[in-house]
Image 1 (cartoon, helix red, strand yellow):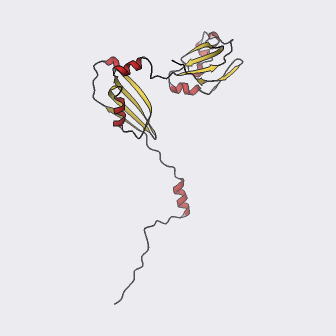
Image 2 (image 1 turned 30 degrees about the vertical axis):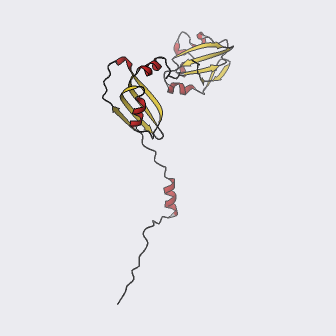
Image 3 (image 1 turned 180 degrees about the horizontal axis):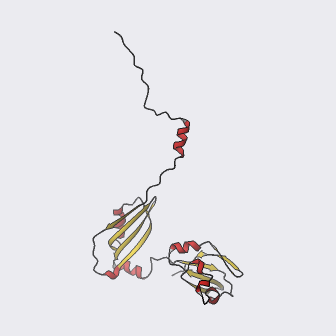
Length: 194
C-alpha cells in the first residue's frame, strides 16, 4: 500500500511582522460612546408648583437606569428623566414632583451650591464707583461675566465677591489673575457658612 503523507501547516497562530504588531499597539483605544436617552414615566402631577427640574452630576456609569430611577424616587415622583452617559459617570436631568421632605430641603436651598468667586485683600481705595461706573460697559468686572458683586469687610480684610449664573461662567474665572490699580490677586471659590 502506498501511503502518502500529507504535509500540513499549523494555521492556528497568526503570524504578524514586527511592524504590523507595532501598528496595532499604536492605535488609540476607542472611548465609550456618549449616549443620551430620555425616559418618560407617564406620571401626571396634581400640584404643578411642586415640580422641579434638577441636574445630578457624577452618577457612576455602572448604575442602570432603573437603579438611578429607584434612588430618585426618594425625592418624589419622577415625571421624566434624561441620561447622558460619558465613560465613568452619568449626568441626569430629572423632572420630579417633589415630596414634602424634598420640597422643604429645596426651599431651604440645602441642595444648591453658591456660584461665587472672591478676591481677598482688595484695597480700601476700591469702591462701587470704581468697579461699576455710570456706563456698565466700562466696568472692570465686565470681562469676568459676573451677574452681581459686593464689597465686604470681614475681620479687617476687604473682599470682593462676584456672583455667576452658571458653573461654566464661574469656572472661567477661578484661578485667574485680576489686577485693579495697585492690587493684584487671583479669583478663588467663595463659600459661606450657613
